[in-house]
Image (spheres, rainbow, N blue to C red):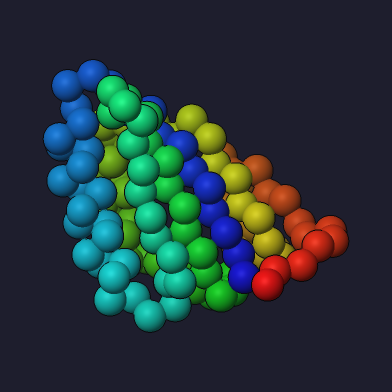
Length: 114
């Protein structure tokens, strides 16, 4: 399982426009079978947005980015990604792709999930 944790910064007055695009991304992703989790959160004044994404493997990330790439480009015209962490085992191609997007990649070490 691979997890994304992303924090967006949204300029004051742009939240509604950002949410409209985020809703488009949610609808695209809702029908995308490899996506296991796709949840959005906003702080109180809605100038920061947290996003959690979970995928079964690197190939699902590539597919997701192909599907939402157009919407993502529009979102990046409005806000900016202020933090992008990827936790999990990635192949070299996917790792290079997310690192070019500004991601910090963390590989598994130890622990468990119940």
